[in-house]
Amino acid sequence: MATPPPPHSTGPHAWPSQPIGPYAPSPGPYVAPPPANSYPPPHGAYASPYPPGPYAPQAGAPACHICGAMPAVPATVRGHQGIVVIMRFLSLRGPFCRDCGLSTVRDMSAKTLWQGWWGPLSVIITPITLLANLATWDRIRKLAAPTGGFRTALAPGRPLTRRPEALLFLVPMLLVAVAIPALIVTGLLVGDGSTPTLPVGACVRNEGDWANQDLQITDCSAPSAQYKVTRRLEKAGSTCADGDYLADPKYGPDGATISCLEPIH
Image 1 (cartoon, rainbow, N blue to C red):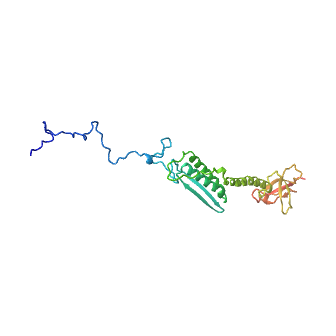
Image 2: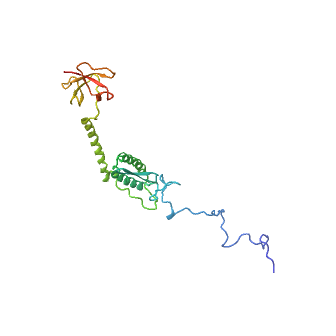
Image 3: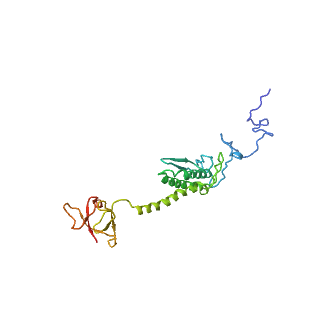
C-alpha cells in the first residue's frame, strides 16, 4: 500500500492546504472572537428604564428608600409633639423621591400642626420644626418625576394649606395676638407693684394715711399735688426743715433713705 504524500508536498498529487467544497471559508477580513465573560447590551425587558436626559441616574446616585425610584435627594423630615410637661422629637431620614418626599413632609407637618403646641417650650419649638420642613419641601419639590422604583411611590396628597390641620395653626396664633395686647393693658392698669422712688423736686399726693403712706407722683401744677420732695436725709444727723413731713423710708432710692416732704398748700 502506497504511503500518501505529506500535506505540504508539491506536485500533481499534493494535498490542498485549504478545504475545498461547501465548507470552504468565505474570503474576508479576520474577525476576532468576543472576549471571555462579555455580554450583549441589555435590551427588551432588561433595558434601562431611565431615558437619556438631564435626569438620567448616575452611578452611585441615591434612590428613594421608600419606593426605590430615582432621582432622589437625601433629606430629613421632622415632627414635634408637645405633651404638657414632656416633648417628643420625631424625624424620618431619606433619601426621598419627589412623591414620597412630598407625602412625608405634608403628613408629618400636618400632625405637628395639631400635636406640637401643647407644652410651654413646644410653642417655640413647633414653628422652628415647621420652618425646617419648609426648607426640606423646597428641595424635594424641585426633583423630576420618580421612575424605576421597585414599588409604587406614595401619593403626595393634598397640600398642607388645604388640610383641616392647617386651621389649628390659627388657634395659637390668635391666642398670642390677643394675649399680648391684654398683658400690656393689664400692666398699664395694675402697674408693676413696685414702690416708686421719690426724686428731689417731684410733687406727690398721699392716697393713704401717715401710718400707711401711699405716695403717688403727680404734676406739681395739678390740684391734687400736696407735697414737694425737698431733700433726702442721706447723712447721719441731718434733719428736715420745720413743718416738713417725713416720707416712708420705702420710697427712698435704696429702700431706707428718708425724704423730706414740704406741704404745697
